Image (cartoon, rainbow, N blue to C red; front, side):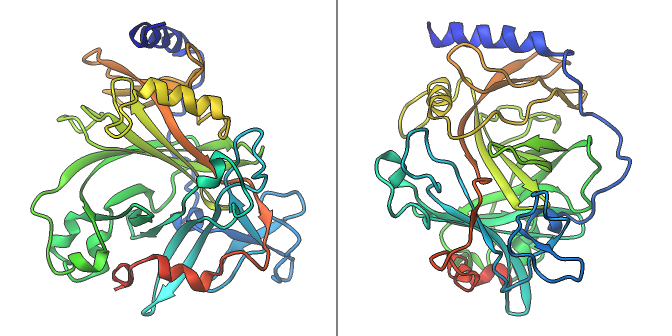
Length: 376
């Protein structure tokens, strides 16, 4: 089957689902508190407040839980899932979402460390680690920058024009969702100015990018069942690379990253999506081919799956598996009639939870992953 024919079949199959599933477009009836609670891992506590080390947030025997404190290590470690048949039962990376205080300032470091794959063999043994630095102001939660073995990425916002020597230059560079988390069933969107810079964050202090790109972020608050079977109320945040001229839809964007945030674990799942006509510039593989490979690996379960109406010019149909066995959805502009299939090409679900061990990374080591400029 040709890629073009497969795409046409996907559009037809997904279009049939529009109107069959309930939309989550709803009015807020009660906010869920500060987004900070959705950015850090929690620990279970006994009625008197002491830590209950034998339980994990979300378990039946965890009646109460609270945010971890700076310098505190939870009694469990998050991790991703191995490919079926892999001997990496514990996953290939260890993940921690913890508050870190430096220079009397607190930020959240979300680490993905190659801490559980030492004994792995085969393709899963090639996992690599990284980290992102997050925070929130009185309006939004956001990612300030990220680290991977191949690149240092800095998300500078137009705040730099007023705070070039302060970490506030990185505020709202990559927005997640509003700081007062909307009620379950709420959708929202916003357009934010930012510039993607490379290299150490400290190397950019004092000077600002000459140009900022406007990009679209959407968010939804809803229950979601993860690959582990754990079902949490989640912030599902979608960050598109661009925005249309009307600032209501993705426009010519061809890539999007979707993140899931929970009160229990913080950053809980990550996905990368691409429009059907996107070609990977390194591998020269098309989006559909990459989506088929992801589905075949079986490391992630089905993504968030609802019909969504963000505004008069942006509707998302539910995802579907169809031709080629992929995870896909359609984004449609009902005013212009333009629509495109988007497919999930990468995914990590971090609900493969294991007890903490003596070999687990320490929160004291987390600052080494991040430039001090994020705390200034």
